[in-house]
Amino acid sequence: MPHPSTLWIKNPQGILSDTDAGNGIVVRDNLIIELVPCGAQPTTAYTEVFDAANHVLTPGLVNTHHHFYQTLTRAWGPAANAPLFPWLQNLYRVWARLTPQALDAAVRVALAELLLSGCTTAADHHYLFPAGMDESIDIEVAAVRDFGMRATLTRGSMTLGEDDGGLPPQSTVQELDVVLADSQRLIEAYHEPGEGATIQIALAPCSPFSVTTQAMSESARLAGHYGVRLHTHLAETLDEEEFCLSRFGLRPLDYLDSVGWLGAHTWLGHGIHFNDAEIRQLGAAGTAVTHCATSNMRLSSGIARVLELEQAGVPVGLGVDGSASNDGSNMILEARQALYLQRLRYGADVPVERALRWATEGSARVLGRRDIGRIAVGQQADLAFFKTDELRFSGSQDPLAALLLCGADKADRVMVAGRWRVLDGAIPGLDLPALIHEHRRHARALVDLSTPVIQYS
Ligand SMILES: [Zn+2]
Image (cartoon, rainbow, N blue to C red; front, top):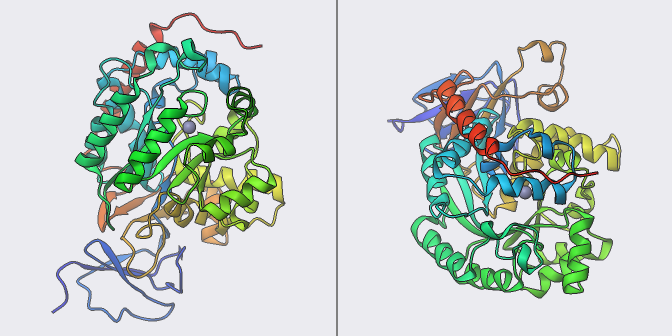
């Protein structure tokens, strides 16, 4: 007797797999159990068949850096044409008025965008806890569960305000004791350490210019105690480098090392301004980097040295970054941006497939996961299905290359842990117009109340 839920996804138009899977894959419950070579039939008895003749399959895309709440402040005039520091200084004042209801809508909008673009696992860096926002991560957990996705939710923090030489306004920073107690509560309540995890928690002091040295080292200690990962922004801009040199007398990576963060349990957002010796140091430590191509272009931060990082042994994945610096959460388009930005640095022979692998297995490694990010036997059945029948694909020859070169921007179907979460380009059960209406209402309220802006020239 075949197992009651064994699905053969047969005859895909194209597939990004570890070995030949020309005639598809077999999924049982939440796992991939067989890759079926070209011209072959499954050796496993199956109960259902899905004909993927019109679909290109990739592993579910994995987004490793985001700030979901920022979907509320996309394309906001005073931050539309500025580099990181003035961009932040204007936005902090708006974000300081975040409410639980606005965050809930923002998280759902970000998750919907990600899922519809083929993303099955997302990391969020939430560091904003003004008064009344104590349950921010709990709100995120509930939304991720509703969408049936996986997430690494980071308990972020800001502890160094303007009064003490930091960048964020005082109303957005917290006492370290409060941060650590909440971090501990969240790890104990939600972190799933094993394979197939839906929710993982990591600790994420925001950046060198918004947290104290003590917050960095105490977060590392707590993360080490519980075996959870560490995340922060690092080497994003030269402003940050100057800040570290003048405040700590250290370059950003030396500062990171000095607070006990350099290791395989850490991943860094951006990682642009590393010199040759620092790249070797990162590789030796196994510290991972998230490449955020669109955000880096949007804020003119620089171009990460992705191929050299990988050459040195650094795990590299992709991130859409917060929606105030992208201003979207589209993961398949992010892979296209990363491909093109890296071609500007290294030349036109950076392969398309390499960018798809950054978005999948590279990103999975960045999050410390070995159970997702590949189409291989024993992996979680997290899959994205793209159609290439739209006008933009007409005349395309190689279906996998077409995803990035022709600019695929939405998945037709998405599966997470063997369950369909997107069907015919829509999320079953989600009233998208109602969500957009609600989200826009909160976004307007947040910005309408805004204080005067800082002029950037
Ligand atoms: Zn970021």
